[in-house]
Length: 427
Image 1 (cartoon, one colour):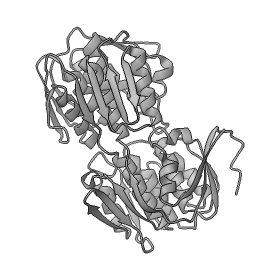
Image 2 (cartoon, rainbow, N blue to C red; image 1 turned 90 degrees about the horizontal axis):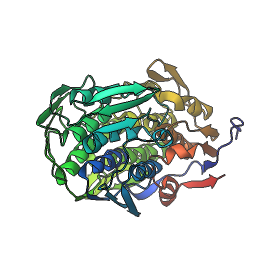
Image 3 (tube, rainbow, N blue to C red; image 1 turned 180 degrees about the horizontal axis):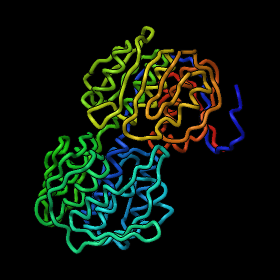
Image 4 (cartoon, rainbow, N blue to C red; image 1 turned 90 degrees about the vertical axis):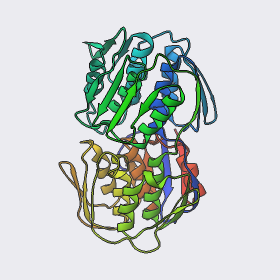
């Protein structure tokens, strides 16, 4: 196994490939739901009990930010209780802001509660520019004033007011931030060209449980009738569709058979269609989804990422890894994030043949993947490297698992339950 360079990483996965994944795996709560819902809890000024929270580093970082703002936060396994009655700050520190992009959701929440929000440049994975301009523009359209000073943005509004808004692009984050901010604005807000992801429906359902009046999430038009205030509530996060899709790709890559407990088929239709086109068997069960790859995958791949219900950009790397493991050829077009193909050079170390041409990944020929030392540079790219390592011949070391832990809880433990030989090494 090649050493792959001289970088030093504290945490790594050591994986011996060639094992069929087989068995049942339970999903965690959705990462892309819990973060905006945590942010929205600030608006209530009361106690929110949120169940089925994924125990991931992004969730921990958001809890730390809420504590810094003055919230009382208590965690018991997957249940988190947030009491936002005593908000004492409106500024998010640079260190915490830089850990995750989702901290930008707090701009709308703080505007509602405090009339002022000061945020810096959000952090997160290195998959593209992902500017927050759309978020700021939507909040300004609701009546906020914005000033920028040395890379920080200060937003002020005595009272937000409902408006007719149209997003220039169906941005998930901007859709969610606008919904949060408009929930207690004066009058009605109609948001057109909204993103349609299931996590937006989850946010709507949480806010409505707290007394908001929102309808239309999951469609291109969301209508928010502002209410005077929200109240305490208990809410359960939906299962993570991206985690489910990752296990589906891992089953395809390893010629495995997996039952994914609590997976929701309606959230994964385009992924299922793409894998079935390659020869996987997929069916709905009473409490989840079953996938089996019992014969060699076939066909020429051609997928294009798109906002929901299109093929998810967050599953593009894992799907590409499964295609490479099967020795197939094809084209993968990335239409959401311009730097999403950072993982390709690492897959090529393992024997894949991927050429990047602008926003397209050209998989030119198939070779048996072989174990190597590879480095994760972002969350989903890291999951792709794990997918490839599970299918590869020999041993692999996946470095940079801190990225993977941002979105997957106990991935190594879940994979061992499915028969994988994977160990985490700390330090």
